[in-house]
Image (cartoon, helix red, strand yellow):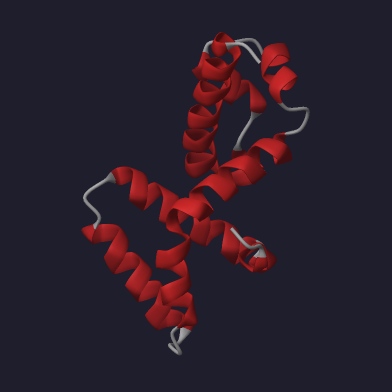
Length: 121
């Protein structure tokens, strides 16, 4: 893979992350990712054939970045309400909107697909 292709792939991953954080799996559209990347949809499909492949890459990336924080909260013997409260407070106190978006994205996906938390990161 050429240096230009690597840069394009990195740009696409960064933009996918933004789109999936904002829209989730069901709301994200490949065309939206292509538009934000300034490329056509055919080129986007060159890097991945299916939206789920992109989604898995984003979920894995964000999971790796936040896994220790999330695991420590989930392992506590607290009620779901108390765990949500901790997530909420951590999101509010986070100084970076990226962290807030990531935690919201991950919590939303775990809520819709609890089996995802079982994957090792």
